[in-house]
Length: 88
Image (cartoon, rainbow, N blue to C red; front, side):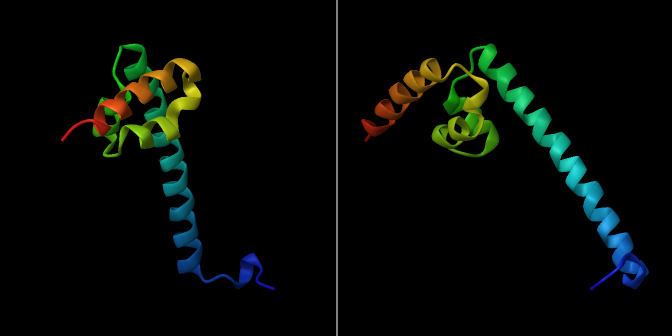
């Protein structure tokens, strides 16, 4: 079994860096959720949010809709998806 004293110094530095990166990613994800919520509250559609995130409207909705009133959001998304299906 590996114990902390058995870990090489470089591995300790690498693991410390990995922990810091993970913490930073968690903070960035929290900020992303806040901005998505702000965008929704200011009237942005899931399509526009998806564009900003580099994903589809469905992808944005799937990831972030837990922060919204689900029935309202799903109704809007359904309309957007139907409109997209009817485009040439």
